[in-house]
Length: 225
View 1 (cartoon, rainbow, N blue to C red):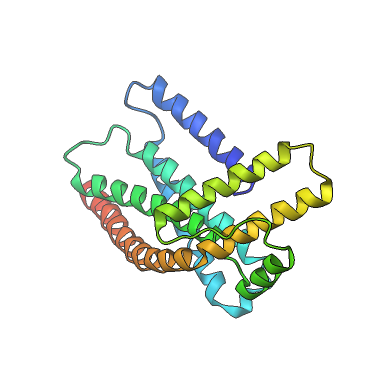
View 2 (cartoon, rainbow, N blue to C red; view 1 turned 90 degrees about the vertical axis):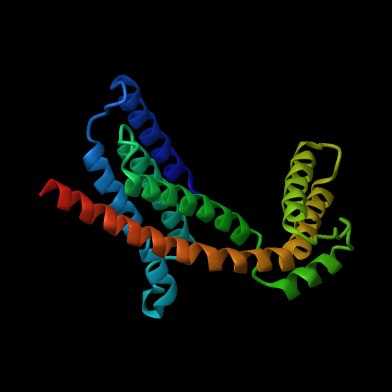
């Protein structure tokens, strides 16, 4: 996610956290933050529209839309969490709604991680890896735990290469490229399988969240009346 988005989230967390800490369990503006959080999560659905409607392809790269989608989801969670401070434990619908928000956001973060492991051109990766002389061995990856382990190992090896000043620049670049390609080729099948499973989970959860949020809002107006 781009750094400006991260900075905005950190500022929001700091400000809202300060308000919550100073209010002794009854922070101000919880009602307004709930509406803003709901709006943030509604706007984030524009990513799905952009992805499906070909006429919107001119409106920026899909990756930028995905970054905005993730940012708005995380922002919505922060605002809804603040909105939920001081809520009555007996408010079961509100509790279910908040739990679903947390689950959907967590699932979204996992999905973004899996998406980042999906290379765009498997054949070209294999040819490039062979052309480099296979300087980095091709590891085996059979499950999700191995996928995560290989990704962490790839990051560790790349950091070590960046710190190693004894290698010639050309060889260091080739090694970094070979390590990255070996990891991408190894995890592709597992990442695709788990991303497909994630899609089957994330969409129904998002629809369930929409339903409970609608009920939560309707219940609020019903009791307010």
